[in-house]
Image (cartoon, rainbow, N blue to C red; front, side, top):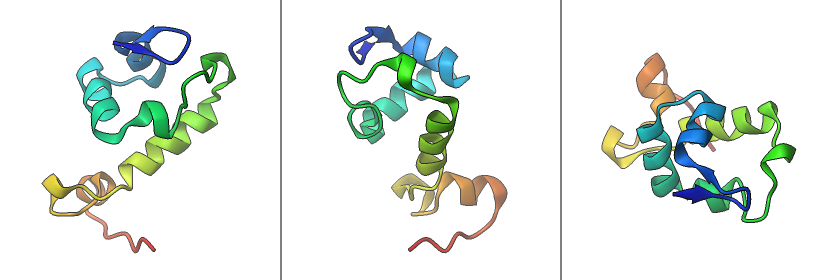
Length: 84
């Protein structure tokens, strides 16, 4: 699978994000990250660490049906978020 106009593979993206390849692949499919956070044509060189950390934070605070509509953050830290 290639990503953005740079033609990055899931493995390369996983290395950039310091994540497991299967996790990145699953999240790309599940959350449509490629379009929602990194639109087609966006150069990977222009993506900062702050931007990547921001969308990781947003993903971790997105409720999941498989977690009983809790966020990954809530499950991991056993805290309830008051999202508005």
